[in-house]
Image (cartoon, rainbow, N blue to C red; front, top):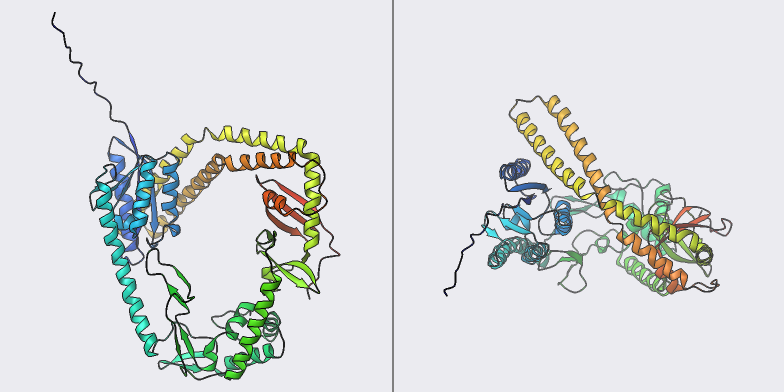
Length: 520
């Protein structure tokens, strides 16, 4: 008996709709930046909307920002975040150089998006990361773009270093006390008098903060319209070798490879010390004496500021960090802004012991009331998280609406450029569209915030677990317990400290105002 074979033809599958996004970037050296930027956004909006198998997810665009560092590209980072959350299937971009000027970044993000199930099409190079063979082509194109940026940077640095070696290099800005005239630094006598006063006061025993306050009281002249002297400004003048007529070049250096970063030169690059570069304002003896005093003060400060659990934990009401300091043998914490400029912040120092005592009191109160506070907070957060689960559709609608409004704005811009739309009408309609876009983006951020409640919930659960294991009230400050519970401390008033605990739970403790150190 012969076998009977029946061929079953494959069913015709409907081609799925693909959620497509576009990424546009116009480099900062574009001669027609706005037009090129608008053209890219308009092109991709039209291209995606006209393809029946594509659905516009969003247009991501960074305007006038360098491609060498992705950290500075807000919309690029938003694109990666949305890919991670599964909102995008495919990304279109003009070229590898628009996507990244860095081979490592180009490959890293191409692989990362591929892990999220997202492919990238680079139109200029015709590279599609949906195919395995594309990675090699992407590497070559990325390397070419990177080498172009490296070559330009090397040429500029080579030129500057040659001038440093020959002693002919002139910085783009002149130090206080000088002006650039006829290719050389000339002394500005009114400012030079202030420089001499700063050195004289410092060598007589005045601190940098006291000198800054003195200059502010006498309305000493400053540069570029600034009217306030700060401790940093005084410190810069005291350590600048320009005031004895010399110049030290390449105090900072730029890295050789991508991403280019600028940092203090600690021996990585050669430095060039040129004597008699300009006319001196102070003597070498006074300058060297000032450096010895600064070095001695720095050693004393480092020995006093040991590793403390409160470091980088306390924030003033003005937003600045609190830093440790010693007054008559006692440890205090004071606002950094207040230390530099007493007019910008009126806060007072807090004794370190009072902060520790407030923490002990807060832990014991929370331990006693744990069962009434934390289970309720955890349950409410869980309900918010469940509610956020239905926001995906709305976020998708917002992304589509933003893309459509952006396209309308581009059409208005073209009509205005051609003279079809009057400037007043263009400004009115464009403003209305921008207001609507901003409102949608705010709504989108709020929805995303609701989706990100996982870290809050996890923190509250960990806090509940920590307190459960504290059997008895604590009587001494526990550094390990503090580090595991407290994210940040703020100082809202003269008599209170607010502890922000893991999970975002804020608890306020009162402190004595009488023990706080008043500042003159």
